[in-house]
Length: 355
Image (tube, rainbow, N blue to C red; front, side, top):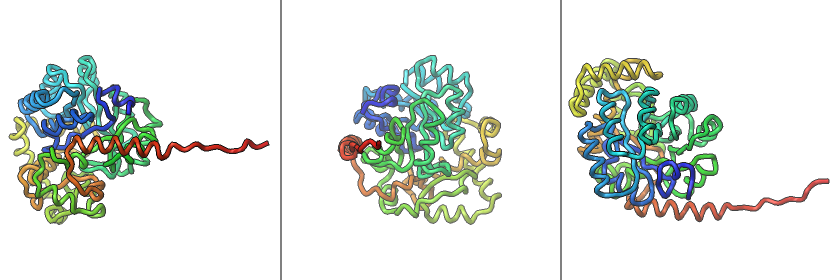
């Protein structure tokens, strides 16, 4: 299962565990690495000290390479970059491209830069800024997501860039891995499938809702921060949909204050970061201010175990998942099925030459 992605990241299999906030902790990342995949620590909801402790915990449980995810526009982004360099993490992931200077600093330290994008133009821009690889997420994926399906987005991006690509959105098994490779990807990235594993820290009450939700109940809404996010439809989302824009903005300010305190920031620093995100991206200033809504609402379900009082980000693929395997068994099963599926479609096409 050697691909350009495994060569770049140093893992045995082209399977990435994505950095889901409150979910991708040290235990899940270490389990992924030990099983041959490549895991990302969810640093976007951590303070710099927590990230540093997380890195140390991963190294105490695994010798496998791993990465760290964080937002490049938080006030302490430079400190996190220095932590990643100091501890020689293999890769960093991010959703909004940082400055070219930051990327140069990471690349000079031999750290792989692998952002996640949901549109062709963002993939092209990321590579122009120096990204070594790209995770492309189709509309089936959970959390912030685009409007183009993975099966369409993947060949579109493949034609536009030359760096390794990991396809995300709709993957859970070996058949999906083979399909992604056949369409030009160098591997797959999965979030929901790893969320529904034994090593995932998500409370069992929350996992049970994921296992019992059909695909059509995993919907896209813009009510959290004005951007499309895919999540499980529940009573809390219904209340958000009925809220006024003013009410949502007021909620965002409160959540922003709480999130800033949690991650060691301040209101001024949060506003400054929101302004930088607005200047660098496609979102309105109001949307960037509302970005703090997501992590705090997600925490209620993912950490506190109150799924009916929080948001449940999910890929549509959750509607096909019915078990909670150990990560080692999950990855071994994907690899075994991929090899069998690849062999079954190894067809020889022959025909007579026309005269």
